[in-house]
Image (cartoon, rainbow, N blue to C red; front, side, top):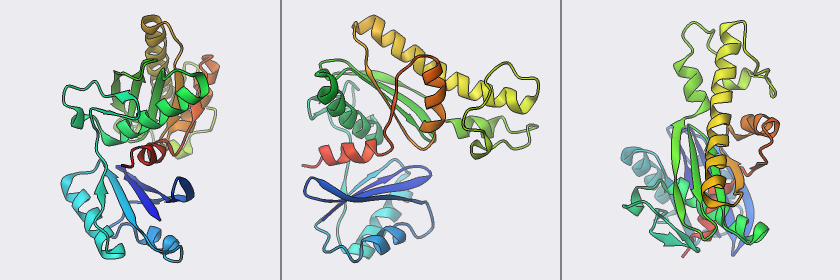
Length: 253
């Protein structure tokens, strides 16, 4: 059995696979003793042959995760990083390894989906997590660069002074995004509309420059908050909660 672990800034996501078949997937909140719940779930599933770790956390936090893997499974984890090219996709960063491994993995998975669905790798990947990232890939699989902005929760936290500590979980699924007559609703509308308009601008600019409509995939914990607004803007998007993990599977050597 192979375990892929995606360690983000707020959660740890994981999948277990036998060959090319995913048999389980899950997530846990970060804690002082990471991966215990993953070990508990998988302890009766048989032997672990490989564990692959993708981490966007600090070196110190990543070292804690590596030690946890060794302690729980007696396996040295294989680190997943970005590369100059993989699976028909070209990384256009001048220093390929500086592109976040989570972004690279999501790009790889998205490009395979786009090629299967349309015959082209034209793609826009939006990861709505702690940060809001947007990455674009042309129809030949060449990464065209991307955008990084504060995530929805990060923006709300930065604006919370005087607004009653608005939490994303307390916002209705389909909030009214019209000009607001109170501070709380004005903050909510501003944050959500800003994110939606950034995505729309990225997609429209790509279409104008590339002459092709990209497949738009949204992932990340805050992704569902964006889908309704994008739909109202006549932007077709698909939510893919496990896109980074899917990419990790494609990137297995």
